[in-house]
Each structure stands twice: as structure tokens, then as C-alpha cells.
Length: 257
Image (cartoon, rainbow, N blue to C red; front, side, top):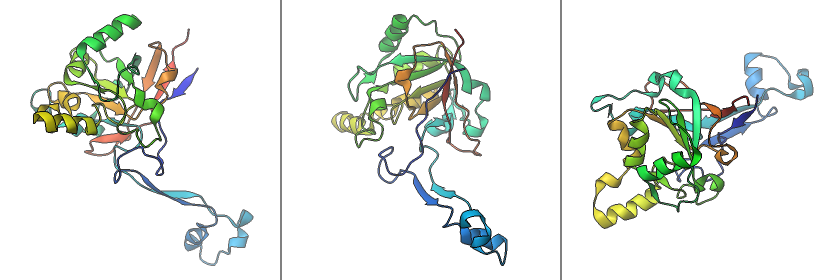
């Protein structure tokens, strides 16, 4: 069995998120933690432990959208499916999260390009994939190769409303991208909003979930190593009560030939 890791690590010293939204990780090594061990065992001397070591431990400050994560419909809006209460990450059906995968290769699109339904249909025709309900559709963008660089958050194309709806209307319930957002970068949308005053441009792909509830994976990694299809994606989210997202160790499991 070949398993391909599609996840980025949680790390606090790379530009994985905008300033103020990045993970903060405090690393405590085996020597620094000795006092903590001694608090459990009064009278214990460090020398009594092998190599005078206790344990390694980390303290992590995160939001639920750091690292590779699965967004629940509740992240996009308070309602889904035309007015129903949007489900949170602990309510997402687990069978949505272990399904055949298909990759759309949009690396050739410029940063800030809004992918259309016609683009999606043309890519499915190019790769010869017969889309099925509940297939997990992931999008390989130019942002994937820029992870860890200062321009990562502002890189890549984004999925527009009509492209997203094209997938959802055909039964897709989990999508994904290697960019920071399913939509185009906020820097691009801000410019377009300033020019037009059209608030409908803001988060248009995400907001498709108001009409048809769905989840998407963000900050995937290593999508360029995948074929167009022939694999299964596993992306079970951490179960956080009433939350808008959950971290996931997303992987692709290659189907036996």
C-alpha cells in the first residue's frame, strides 16, 4: 500500500497564515521538563532518571484553521442547504471524509484567477474522469509550491461560486486546495471590491455552502505528486465540539493496480 502525505506540518516560523493568525509552539525538552516530573514524585532527584531526563512536550496555541484542516459548513455561514442550520465539524458525516479522490490541475492559472464552471468541466474532460457523488475533488494550484514563502498566502487561483456550485450540484461534498483559501487571495478580492463595491465577490466560493452544504480542505500539500485519479483520500477531522473546522492529517491512499 502506498500512502501519500497531503498535509503540511504545524509550525510557527513559516508564513503559513497572515500575521496574527500563525501557530505558536513552545518546545520543552527532556531537561527543561525535569521539574514538572519531580512535582509528581516528591523527593525525586534528576540523577535517578536515565540520563537525568524527563519528557519532551510541546505547548501549542492554534486556531482551528491553522495547518491542513477541514472546514465545516458552519465556517462559511450560519445556514446551509437554503436555510437549514449549518453543521459544525463534529457533525460532519465521517463517510464524506474517506472517498475516491480526483485532482484538478490548475497550476497554470495566474495568481488571483477565479476558476469558472467551464474551467472545471474542461479539466474533467481532459483527465477523462467520470465524476461521482461524494468524490473528493482537490485542486492543485500554483500556491502549493510556495508553501513556506512569504507570498504563500497571496498565491494561487481560487474557486469561484459557479465552479463550486458545479461540483456541489453533482454530489461532491468535500473539496480541497493546496492554497491558503478555497477562494482567491483576500488581497485580490480587496482590490476588486474597492473597484466595484460588489460585496458578492467576497468569499464567493465559500458562500456557495449557503445553498448546498459542503466541506473543504485547505492548505493541502504535495498534490503535484498525485495522478488525476486512482486514489482514495482520508481526511477525518479532529472532533472539536461546535467548531467551524478541525485539523486533519490528510492522506491519499493509492488504489491497487
